[in-house]
Image (tube, rainbow, N blue to C red):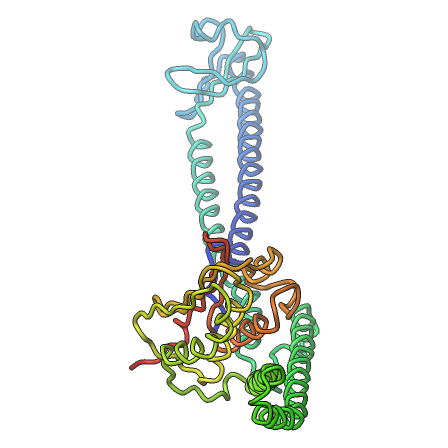
Length: 420
């Protein structure tokens, strides 16, 4: 059996998303820092360029020499200063001029006020190129981060997945992977191995104990059954002794059957013989046996047969599971009816008795009960045995309140069916 596939919120996906968000944060931070740096460097370079132009052009203009400027730079002095630039205060500034944003240096010399205009087309081209490189680097780094995130997530999650598969498929006495690893995965693997070994030892002790006790009980039960049969024969003409002898015989036979069931349950489920057993035969035999329990009570025991089906399980286990439910219903129902029916590959037992205690119902409805169900609090050893048999066979036992003031038990055999 393999572990289920990872869901949308799996650890692998969360690692990739976290790594991607981290990369986006780093890229954004350095992108903003680079943009601020580019703008600052541009302003610094342009300002220095304007001052160098002014330092060269102003003395030449004062001496009456020609002042020739590059195409993107203009030097205006005195009356040649455009009207929209005449009111500017001395210093460096940015301003819209001739339909575009330009850098300006306003100053004064011995001959008057002057203005140096730098349209900075060269710097703009450099700035645009740098921004394009930043954007390309941003997307490239994000793509690389996504690839690295997937690679790192695979390297981190794959050992965990391998360990999970090994735990799910572990054979007895088989070693788990990563046991010799010195990192946290090794600690986890060793913890799994220790816990699994402990559970295997517990199950083995329980199985051996159940088998040993059952074997030890067989001999005294055989003796009791033989003695009870002899008493029944010898007290045939004495009703006051015959009835108790019959009760002793029934109890001894029930105990013998219970011991046989416990012996079968002590075996590993994968080693169990699974013959094809028809459920209708099992129900009819158990109803016939339980009729004596309602013979002297105003209780109707009836069977509503449905579509018969076969179950891959020993007949003894099916008789114990179904028979205990019918027997308990007949014993605890004092008035009304006990109805057994077959529907949708399940056996349903309904009664009009006092019903189960709420605590027992809650524990039966829990997928993984906190406490094991034992024969107490009015539930009887039979119900605990039914629960154990259903778990052993892979069937599902459920119980709910009966509208007629009783209980409805249902054993669903869909996972244990055989083909006809």
